[in-house]
Every structure is written in C-alpha cells, then in structure tokens.
Image 1 (cartoon, rainbow, N blue to C red):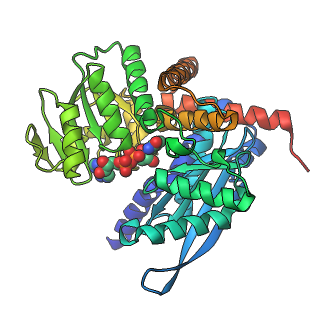
Image 2 (cartoon, rainbow, N blue to C red; image 1 turned 180 degrees about the vertical axis):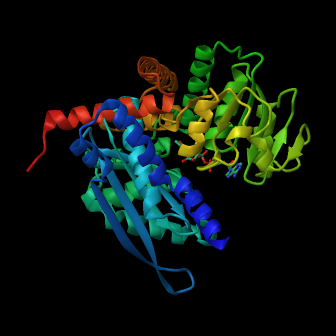
Image 3 (cartoon, protein in one colour; image 1 turned 30 degrees about the horizontal axis):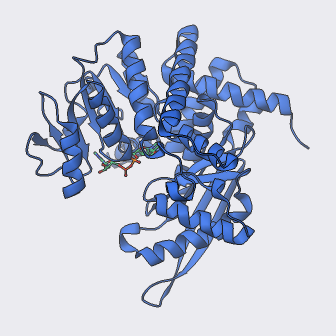
Length: 427
Ligand code: NAD
C-alpha cells in the first residue's frame, strides 16, 4: 500500500517537474521534425550554468550566505534573455526549465535572443529593502562575467521588479565604468525603460486570445472568460479584454476567487485591488475558493498565476474551449494530452505570454539606439509580432496535424537547429 503511494507520488512529482515537462514537449516536437540525435542532444543541454554564493551583512549585524543561479540555455541566435526570480523555492531544475523555455519563446516570436534564467534562494518578505539591494548587487557582481548587452540581458521575474533592474544596471555600470542601460530590461522609463513594457505580456495574451477566438469562430461578445491571477499578466489581460468587449466572469488572486455571471466591472476590480491589495471583500461578486475557479463554466480560460495549475487531476473537469497560457508552465504534459484529446485549443505559454520578452527586445533595441519610441509605436510593433507568430504557429499545426503547443515547439526548435547547422560546431 505504502509502496503504491510512493509510486503515485513519484509519478505526480515527475509530472510537476518543470524540466521534465519541457523535455517531454521537446522530444515530441523533435520526433515530428525528425531531428538528428546529435542536434537534439545539443539543444537539450544548457550551454552554461553558474551557481554563486552571496554573502550578505544583514541589518542585525549577522552574516548570511544566499545561493544564486544563472543558467544560459542557448545563445546561438543572440544574447541570452531571461528573468531573475527571488524565491525560497527556487531550484536548479526550475531555473534550467525556465531558461530553455526562454530559448523557445524568443525563437517562436523570431526575436534574436537565446534563453537564460536566474534565481536567488531567499524570501523577500523577510528581507528589508537594504538587504534586498545588497543581495541584488552582490549577485550581479558574482555573475557579471557572463552578463552584458551582447551576452546575457536579465529582466524581472517573480518577486523582482523595476527597482531590482535599476540596481543591476547601476552595479554593472559602476564595474564597467560607463552607464550601460542595455544590460537589463524592465527598467524604469527614467533610466532607459520602454513605454508599454509593463502592459506588454497582458497585451500579448489579449492578442493571442483574440486570434484563438477567430480561429475557433467564436464570438467575443458572448464568450465568458475566467482569468486566474490578477497581477501583471492576469490583471492587465483582463482589463484589455474587458476593453475589447469580452465578458470577464471570474478573476482570482492567491487568496480567493470572485465570480459574476453577468460580467465583472474589471476596472472597478483593479481599483479595489490597488486599494485593498486582495480581492477579498469585493462587493459586486460571489466569492469562491481557488480550487473551484479553473472548473467554472466558461468558453475561455486564462491561467495567468503560476505553474502546474492544470494537471492530470483536474484537466477532465475543465470546461473552456480555449485556454490561453499567460503563466509559464501552467499545464503539465499529461494534462496537455488530455486537453488535446478533448479538442480544447491551448495557446501555449511560449507563444501566448511572449509579449513581455518581445517588448524587452524593443527596450534593448531602443537603449542601443539611444532613441525612444512612443507607446503607440511599441504597441503596433508588438501587435504585428504576436499576430504573425500566431499565424506561423497555426500554419505548422495545420500542416502537421499537431496541437498549437507542439507546433510552437517545432517552429522554435527548427529555427535554433537551422542556426546550429549553418554555424557548425566550433572545435
Ligand atoms: P504577479 O506576481 O504580478 O501576479 C501573480 C498573480 O497570481 C497575483 O495576483 C497572485 O495573487 C496570483 N496567484 C498566485 N498563486 C495563485 C493561485 N494559486 N491561484 C490564483 N491566483 C494566484 O506575477 P505576473 O508577472 O503576473 O506573472 C504571472 C505568471 O506569468 C508567472 O508564471 C510568470 O512567470 C508569467 N510571466 C510573466 C511575465 C511578465 O512580464 N510579468 C512574462 C511572461 C510570463
């Protein structure tokens, strides 16, 4: 009996392991492409992994040593690009998976970057602003040898923000003795950030939803939308979709879910969130537990909170016809297969949430040109990249009779593999 439980737990653990989840999709797409075994081996393996010790003098006078990672999965198409997260749960397998996802994401939208990701094991809720600044600066100094506008350009991720990017930019600039704005993206506009960057991921999710709806022949006016998460991605996607006339019936945060079958007044929900910091108590809606949200009756589901939300344990109870993955890795490989079998269209994370990295690329370009664009220019270029990429992925899916996810991987892997073949192996 206990042996059975261990086996069951092990298979669930494997299902939830982000690196295995990425590798499973990679293998299926590579099989469809008939990818050579050697190239497959190269593309599966991260190019470089750095682990650093970060000794910090704490406010109370003690010294603590934190651990930081930077994984560069692949830099054959250009400098590496990827966020840095601060979290007590960061582990190397997670950073590896996220770095690989960045390679495929940049490739699928055709921007000239490779993929990387970084993380520091720490709990920002327990750290003062001064301690966070010292961790950021020491971590930056420790990984500086592999960073640079032409090497690896970090960005914000979980629990890091514009301020963190400003500290990284300053630390790097002080070391190289010149102001180097293109070393990070997601910076404040005052130090070289891009207009439209904050909304970019949510805007990309909105565009992907619209494109998915169009392919399914569904009417935005009658579609009910459920959005998991109300942060940078979920909150902005909900606002923009509401503005486009979609009916957002439910939205959530980590503490709970709100539901209004007649449609939520999304701007009012966002104002409430700004004032109260959580959805709890919002008057114009029913309140539910989070575990009920993903299974609510709806046409469109946008998981935009965190990974591993749709698993083999709840996939068959999902009612949406279109799922647009705002978060990274919200659906496990096992659940993806169940959704495919049920005929649900899933716009995969590496396409649906690529709006953020696309405008990060625009930010890097603007920093290097020293010439900054209006928000309208940023948004129309983003629109063009997202709509074209959706078309490309949809075309591969039709041609090979595969899901949008496998099509996105095929397109992305094929572009990186082409670069490998052209460049050859340096020896
Ligand atoms: P965020 O911290 O701004 O917001 C996360 C939201 O999810 C918050 O509202 C939080 O309360 C909620 N949440 C957390 N756990 C939840 C749960 N179990 N149920 C319901 N709600 C929950 O983060 P974000 O920037 O919006 O990122 C969300 C996801 O999108 C992450 O997977 C991130 O890696 C991915 N992503 C973000 C960007 C970006 O530009 N911000 C780009 C690409 C991908």
